[in-house]
Image (cartoon, rainbow, N blue to C red; front, top):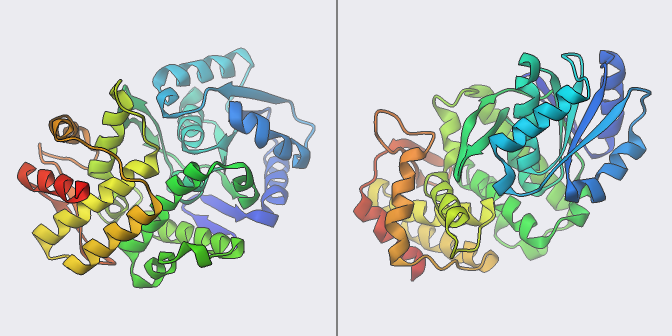
Length: 355
C-alpha cells in the first residue's frame, strides 16, 4: 500500500512502517526518544516496536493506565512531569503506541510540552487506525465530557501496522468498525455497500477497507482542517453518541460503553432524526438499524435516562451561539450540517431505537 500524505503528516502502512520510522529518527537526530504506552500495549505491542527500532538514542518508556476514564488532564500532568524529570527537550520525540486514548493524550502532551516537541503515532486498535490518528486532533476529556480540552496538531508520522490487531479483543474491533460504517454513510454507496456482509471479508479485505477509510478521512480533513465546514460531517452520529458515552461513563449504575458502541446508537438515532427532518428514506433508516443491531448488542436506554443525555448535548463541540448542531443525512453520501433538532424528535428517536 502506498504511503499517504495528510497535511504535514505521512501515513505509512504495514511493511513500510518501521523502515520509515528508522529513517525519520536518523534524519532528525532527536535528542531522546520517549515511548508512551498503557499496560496493554506495553505487554503486547512495545516488544515488536523495540525489535524493529534501530537507534543508539536513549529510549525512555512512559506508561499510563488504559481506558477513557484516564484520558484526563491529571494523567497529562503526570506525563509532563515524567518528561521533565527525564530531561526531555524540544528536540526529543514522543512515540505514542496504543489506541485513541494514547494517541489523543500523547499527542496533546507532546505538542504542548515546552511549546511543542515532535511526536509519532502508532495506532494499535482499529478505532485509532481509522479515526483517532488521522486529522491532528489531540486532547483530553473534562471530567466525563469528551474531548473538551485539546488542540489540532499533526504528528510527524502515523504508522499503521494491522498486525497489531491480532491481539485486539473482539469488542474493540467492533468499536473501530463503527467509525468505518460512519465513513460509508457520509461518503456514499460505493464504500457503504462493502459492509453489508462482514462474514465474507478476508484479512486482506480488512486491510483494504482500513486504507480506504484513512483516505476518506484524510480527504475531509485536508479540505477543512479546522472543522469549519466539511469536517463536521465526520461527527455524524457523534452528537448524541458522545452524550450517551459520557452519560454511561459517569453513571454508577451503568456499564461504560466503548466509543464505537455509543456511536452506533448515535447513528441509529441520527438516521431516525434525518428521516423526520431532512427526508432520509425510511427504507434506508430501517435497513441501517437492522444491519447495526446484527453486529452490535442493543443497549438498554430507559426513558428516565433521556433527560440527562439530552442535557449533555449542550457540551458538544459543534455547538455555537447556544444552538445544538446535528449532522444529518439526506441520503447515503449526502450530509446536511448545522441542523437544529427539537427534544421531542430526539425522544422519538430513542423510542425508535428501543423498539
